Structures are given as C-alpha cells and as structure tokens.
Amino acid sequence: MPSRRTVLAATAGLAAAVTVGGQAHADDHRLRALISHMTTEEKVGQLFVMRVYGHSATAPDQADIDANLQEIGVRTAAELIARYRVGGIIYFTWAHNTRDPYQIAALSNGIQRASLQQPRGLPVLISTDQEHGIVTRVGEPATLFPGAMAVGAGRSRADARTLGRIAGAELRATGIRQDYAPVADVNVNPANPVIGVRSFGADPDAVASLVAAEVSGYRHAGVAATAKHFPGHGDTAVDSHYGFPVITHSREVWERLDATPFRAAIAAGIDSIMTAHIMVPALDDSGDPATLSHPILTGILRGRLGYDGVVITDSLAMEGVRTKYGDDRVPVLALKAGVDQLLNPPSLDVAWNAVLGAVRDGELTEARLDESLLRILRLKSRLGLFDRPYVSRSGVTRTVGTAAHLRAADRIAERTTTLLVNEGGLLPLSRRTHGRLLVVGADPASPSGTTGPPTGVLAAAFTELGFTATALSTGTAPSAAVVAQAVAAARDADAVVVGTYNVTATSSQKTLVEQLTATGKPVVAIAVRNPYDVAQLPAVRAYLAAYSWTDVELRAAARVIAGRVAPRGRLPVPVQRADDPTRVLFPLGHGLSYKA
Image (cartoon, rainbow, N blue to C red; front, side):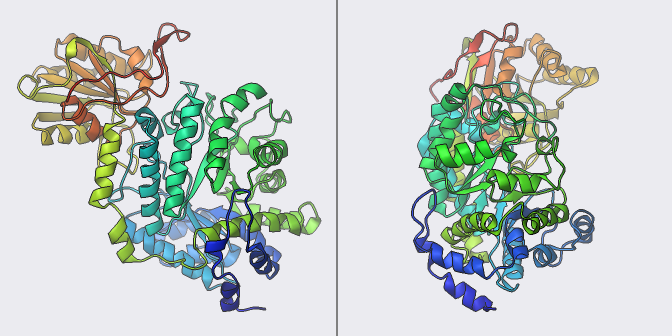
C-alpha cells in the first residue's frame, strides 16, 4: 500500500496541467493511478458532500456534538471523515460553521488535516451557498454583494465579474473552494417561491451574459462556481424544498429560454453544475426528477451540451427528489443518471451503504464510480487542493472584507437600485423639507448579509446622511394596532420610508401603506425583495426596488433616496398589473433617474 507521501507526490503539479469542461486532461493518468489504489468504500465516500455541525473539526460545542450524533452518527467533522471518507463538506450558518472568517479558515484547515491524515489521504472540497443577496452563508466582516436580480438590474458584465472575483477570493481565503453560485435559472414566473430574486432576471440572453461573467470572476479567483439548477427552475410556482415542481415548457421553449444560460456557463468554463429536483416532461416523460434522469443529465447535459465537468445534485434532503423513491434508492439512481457529487443526503449512512451495496450487487460498476471520481479529482487538482490544501490567518486578514472590496460592493449596489415611480419629482428627498423621517416596514428574517432589522439599517443609513430618522418595525403582517401606531408616528415626521416584502392583494402591509399615504405625508416605498410589490400599491408617489434587505442594498437605496447618487437600475423582470396579470405595468428595462 503506498504511503500518503507517495500518493501526494504522484499528483504534484497537477494543478497547472489539468483542465476541465471537455478539454484534454493531460495528467489523467496520474489521477487514474491514484484512483486505482483506492478501496470501493473510499471511492463511494468521495462522491458525497455532507453537512456537519460545529465551528471546529475536532472540538465543536456540545450542542453540535449532539446534533451530529443524532443526524449523522458521529461526533465531529473529523469523525465524519474517518468513518465515511467524504470528498466534500458543505458549510451552513445554521450548522454553526460560519461564525467569522478566522473561525471558518481554522475549521477548513482542521477538515483538511483530518482527511489528509487518513490512509491515502485526499483533500476535501469545501463548499457553501454564497449567492449573495437573500442567500448568504458567510456574513460580515466578509464583503457582501447585491444578489443576482439586483446585479441583473445593473446590467453590467464587469460588475458581475468583479463580484465573482472578489467573492471568490474571500471564500478561497477561508478554505471554501466551491461556491454554489451563480443561479442560472431564468425567472419568468412572478409567483416562483424559491428562485425569484436569486435569478438575474427574465431575459435568457441577459441572464446568460451575467452568468458567464460571474463564472469568469470565480475562475480568476481559483474557486469553482456552480451553475444551478439544471435544466432550469425559473418557471415554477412550487418550491422543490417542499414539493415536486413540474415545468411544462416545450422542448423548443426550453432550448430558447432555460438552456441558454447553461450553455453560456459551459462556454465560460463552469466547474460544476447543480441539478434541479423538478420534472420536465418535454425532456423526460418518465416522471422522474431531473436529478434522477439519465435522458436529461447524460443525454442532454453531457451529450447535447457537451459538458464534461462535475455534476452535483441539489440537496438530497429536499422533498422534490424524495417523492417517488426512498432515500436508499435516490443516490443510486442519481449516479446512474450521470451525477458525480451527492449533496447532503438526509441520512449519510443509508445513502453511503446504498451506493456501496449497488456496487457489490452489480447495479453500479467500479468503472462508473471511477468516472465520477476522476471528474471530482480533476476539479480538486485544478483548484490547487493537492498542492495547497491549507489557508492562513494572514491570508484572511489580507483578503476578507478589505476597504477596497467593500467600496466595490457599495458602488455595484448603487448601480442596481431601481426607481420605478417618482410622481411629482418627490425624490430625491431634501434634508431641508424632509429632515425628519419615519422608517417603517417589514423586517423579515435576516440573512447573514445583515447587521440588524432592515428598518434599523435604513434609519441608521439616513442618519449618516444627515436626516433625523426613527425606525419602527411593523413586520410582514402588521396588526391593526401596529398600523395605527405607525400612522400616529407619521404625524411627527416630514416623510415616511416604508419597506415592503412580497405584498399581496390581501396583505396587511398593503393596509399599512395605504393608511400612511392617507395621512398626506410623502411616502417612499422600497421593495426589499420582489419588485412586483409596486403593482399592489398604486397610490405611492415614489417606489424603489432594492431586490434584498441586506445592508449593502439598503444603504445604497438610502443614498439614492437622499440624492447622493442617481438611480441607474433597470427592471430585469417585467411587472404585471395587479388587476390584470395579462397586462404589463412596468416592462422589462423600466427605470427612472434624476441628477444626483
């Protein structure tokens, strides 16, 4: 049996020679030699990307040890690696993996050390969902950027590339080498509950352009980007976390709409593509989700689109992939369909043993495992994990949340804020006539990109701009008493700024805004998630879309309202009329401006 030193020496220099995306792989023979020394159990483990609780690889808090024992049957990340030899670990905020950049770096180093100390030790591909905007796992002091739909409103390939380059550099400094971004779904359904502002927009060509630009930025940073969710999750009213969506696009519509951004991602050298737990009968009429579909993953993605990089499932704990088959069959069928990485199964023990059993029974061959393992090892090599698996504290200090990075995020955010309505030239607000501001509205659960409730962040931003601002959180479903409290508070203000969050025809947020408007005070509304809110509130004199309630976007919106910068964003999706959804209220590309 070769030593770890021998195995690592056999892979030296691979990072400079191995390429991905269907090109020649000059050093595949070295990787194949490495694979030939692995046991079947080790090969199976390398295909899994698993969650684990705790801020440390070896000494997590007791509550995290308890959670690991309950869900995985191990105490720590180190034990997870020793038992299952997993090839990847995914970080979550709720799993207490991402307290701060220095802790993340130490956790990453601990994971790598635990894996490399195993027989035939291999580096671990550490990943997370750092989409920015409403899906953010690594929070401040890391640099947080606007989310995808905001970037879509900015329409700048340069900004998308900058986002990928800076975000990628900061992730790499903490030991995270695979980011599950960008979202390549085209959001053509305003009722989409799971994609929405995570998409760059409704125009497939614009989405494709920004996806490709962001991918190039991540590649420049040495981080694997992941285009998701293939074959396209943009036109659904069902959340695949909780149900099984069906996409009714014809093959022609899919080719023109959904496939376009994925083609662009592949052309840009995308390192990994994530599957969707959706059914697309025009592509596969078997009733299987795309994650388990050989016609979609092997026939279309690998065959028709020519993609030879890593294919990863969306989380196998999601309901969309569990409705038809049991948890023991799902990972086996995913591999048979053409998947390489199996993400976050509900029970790793069940999934791991199911794949191992399928190999021993002949349903899966060793050659099939080796095919996926080769793709995964190519990616690890390209990312430099064989040569440089560890990160340093000084690298975190030099890279994460630098003043230059933060300025770049602020400037990008300013170019995304979209002014939809400005009746009578209400904006920009003047400190002379509107110096006392009441900031009210929805305070949804905060992603990692926030330092506090949106109303508080906005009020603080206005105060820094010279206004006297008071915050009053009214929530996403204000009661009659809360509405009355806000109306009473408005009497002492010169103007009211209200944040709205997914307003519907029956929402009490609508009642709040209407009663604030009835006071006669100027009301400025900001959609802090979906820009479609404006259709429900026609009486508001000034309306902006921020596309998220993260600090960077709210601060930019405040600067636009105060006239420090001019609004430059343009709607990346059309907004339909509330009384007749077949008619467009604001077309794609709509956006007002004024001189700052």
